[in-house]
Length: 286
Image (cartoon, rainbow, N blue to C red; front, side, top):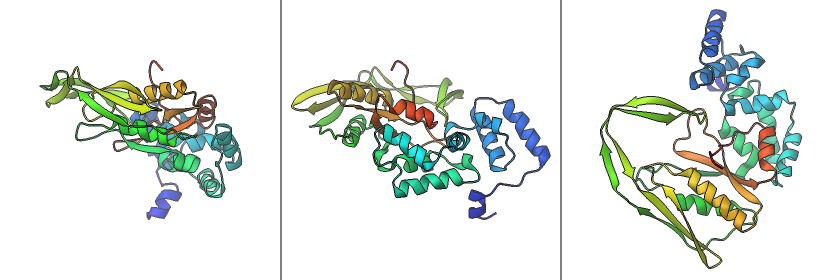
């Protein structure tokens, strides 16, 4: 099967295998395995409408649009109500039409959906840094530069309060890993790991000649995204800016150390995202 057929046509699969996959899917509800099985059934044209509940949230987006009979025009109206004035202009409208008219809508992921919906409004940022120095300050600054009207920060920097520093811990360990759908799964790690004890980042920035700061957990190579988003949104509220930062959940195949963010009207965007089945990260305690 060539690439064009692979992307645009259903795959051939025998009926006994379809039934075996469906039984396996219903036995693995609400997890990564069920999502992959559901995607396979849809790709083969052998899924029922009710099977869509097992799809990864991003694979379900365009399927939900089709079920609601949404058009590019209606999607554009919803986006404009959330403050995206350029939504569904010619190029974006064509991209949305392509998604809506695809014979297998579940084949699309956030890497096609987000550009079609938001274009350059989206911010892609590395949230994992192999040098153990994730750029909390860089994400904060780039979020401010996406704001409309734009916010001009003065200086911004971060420094590590090392506490007890890096300590090597010997396994085995019971650890939780994040899956593509944002959920976690338990696993055992036998090799040694490094843990930062009592360490945190201090991020300092200036705005209109005043200095502000916040702290973020030192999580090794990973960014404390919650600290950045919650403190950025507190800052936006303090200066009476109408927008807030939102994070989209990871794709089914993972994000390769990157995450996707957007600034949008705080009073209208969450409801529009719900109507469009766009999955957002929900931070506990916020």
